Image 1 (cartoon, rainbow, N blue to C red):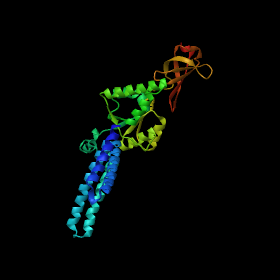
Image 2: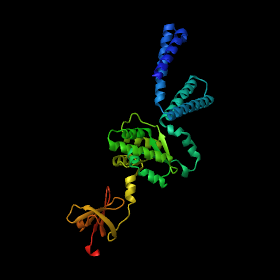
Image 3: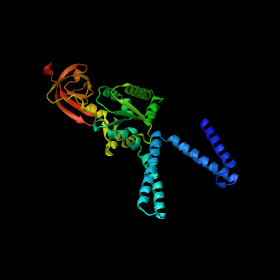
Image 4: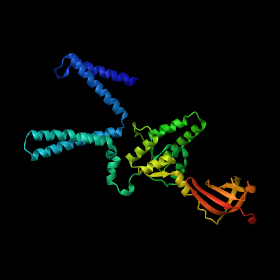
Length: 329
């Protein structure tokens, strides 16, 4: 409420100054009208600036000033090699107008180019460049990312966008008890990552108001920052890969790290339940891999030694098929 009162006071003061001190030799009423329009324009610009990230404001300002200097320099060079004429004056004015405009556009659209860390990165060795990895909601709630970071297998900076934090907070505030628990676990995971000495966590306010889907925002952010996306979301994984964005999938990593079991080997398993086929039992390894064992239904609730007959690789992981030999007991 205070900001609206302040804006009203500013508009009123500018309008009164236009009335008592009319510019451009206007009458008092026309001067007040011109001042009122000018104040509205200023307030509009102020509201736009408040919604804009500081990095964009900074880079746009630097780009505009760079354009002014470049335009003045090009105009001066042209003037030294050309005769004084209206054409020369036009060329100088053209450079002074078009170059700041280009600088403003470049600064607002490619603000990462004018980021100090990016500029200074040109003077660093290539092997120490900053590698960004963006976390999505699913991988934060999953929680395994914190264990992976503790082992120092992931290097660089982990980026958490503000819109991901908002989505995580909505899950944590959900009326559904399970969702609320998952959201709070995600917040605990982020707190653990921020306190970790193995990685650095960067909270970015970069957003894309024209894009409403969170997954699409993540993809746009990855393009801007030239970053990778860490996710467990199958659909986001596929869409990002189709657009040429590197993706690190925790589920794929877990499947790759499962122990290799070859046909003919003997392993000890605990028969947990009966299988779909006759006289089959089902067991699970410590990593969650399903083991289907023939001739083991009557051994439910017991640890037995089995012989691996085959290993099947599926989209969700590995399945092991084995046979229980009663004579081995």
